[in-house]
Length: 115
Length: 108
Image (cartoon, rainbow over all chains, first blue to last red; front, side, top):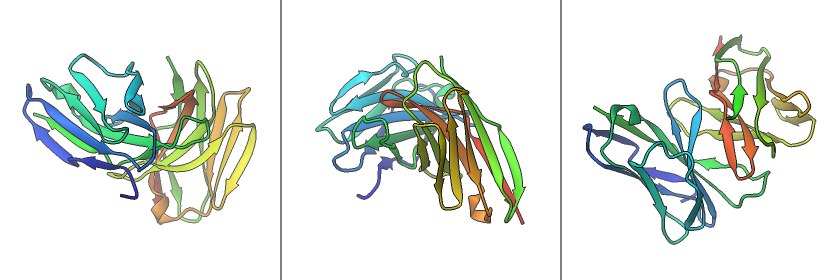
């Protein structure tokens, strides 16, 4: 596709269940990012991929959160044993490379609601 | 930690000018970005400043002063479609650190 694609766009789950969120970046973009956006909060950095490796996982809030990227393309963010405080919009972004002037292109996000 | 501050909300009239300020105190600096985000949509890139001064792009301009840790986004000839959230972000090496965003409401 022409842009960053995320699925599902909306996910409602019960507390304690696991969820998987998928991101399909722009073709050829080597850098991939996951951010979280809560109501009234700024975008919170979660994890950065360069190719298939994740040199920066410093933003993952707990060990319930994990992410992987395969084939230098699609990424999956997994949240295990979801809690109500995990409710947020999870945004994925990709960039051609990590040079300073390269902007990030964002997907429309996956809105997660944990009941 | 990184500190990026911008006002929470601003309101302006159609056809007017609005200036959104952003101040930052960060551990590094590789440039400052402004993004626009309409409700329920993806943030979209507006501007990038890495050197001091003003960058103009149509109705939108962005200014940077690195010594003051300060930037502003200027929106001229406001239109109803400019009602959105405007996000200030500082680039730290490979990632962007964002402010909380400024919600701009344009009234007729």
